[in-house]
Amino acid sequence: PCLELLEKRVRSRFSGRQILFSSPRTPEAALHIMQAALELPEEHHKRWCRGSQDDAAKEERLSSLRRAFRSRFNERVQRLKEDARVRLALERVFNRNGDVASLELFLVAATSRLTVQDALLRPEHLRLANGDV
Image (cartoon, rainbow, N blue to C red):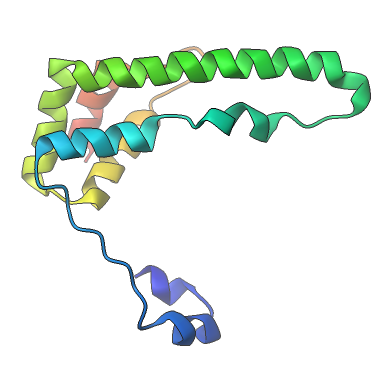
């Protein structure tokens, strides 16, 4: 389906070269995919740090806040991975369909519940997302 969105010349060049990923075989594998999809990368805070030289102190302070948030967010993802309620919600998604696309849809539904005031994932986000998928 994604190939259809590309231009005709690009489609013809890559039509025979598709990379297919197998579905996770166990709920534990789905947990690892969840962690990899949700964790913020090390360079996450650098993507948003742009400004003039005059704002160097402000940018450094913001960069520090972003690093702290990334750290807290990733710690929360790790705790979620170990939470029995999250494992149960993820297992339901896995048993329902068992493919990466449904897992990603589930994670999008969970993260769409985040707000500025509630920016860290909680088991409730994943439990509620289970009904959305």
